[in-house]
Image (cartoon, rainbow, N blue to C red; front, side):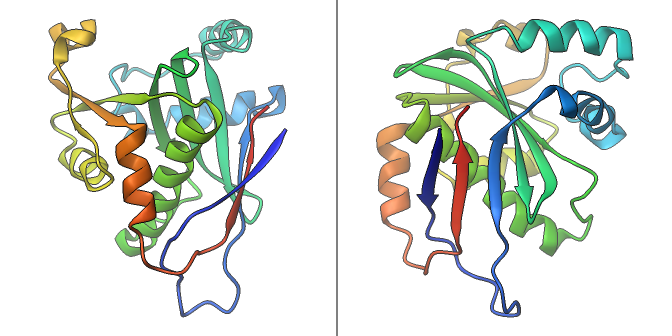
Length: 204
């Protein structure tokens, strides 16, 4: 099922053609790429699990998650190039879900270019959670050392949740963030810039 969702995002006036974004579920063809991307040092250091993941362990994890109805793994592509992996887990349809994402090596290290991509990644993930999964609240966990990510999520309306809802707070120095669907709807309606482009969200 494909769902077209429009975001009101300021367009890059220096470009004659707006980039095309596709938010799609992973397939088995993505398995090795996802492992390579997840094992990037800068990705690992932002995660709770920071050791290099072996191919054997990844295959076991992949087989398990692909059969888990409460887990969805998606890739966001820009003009056909994968730019981010987005995971939704502990999904309770129309109630709540947890969310995490990371960039692929195709995203530039240039801060300005990264910010453009980051905004699109954030909005596509939120739209999928609230418009497709129809959850009422979305949660995520961020290490306190990752201040840039904490501040970025807060720009999109995330607030600090009660840390007791995650057992990880007793093991790691992190914040649990949450965003309600009602708040995101108000934020999206309040965006005054012209739409950047339609994002094609492929639910399954």
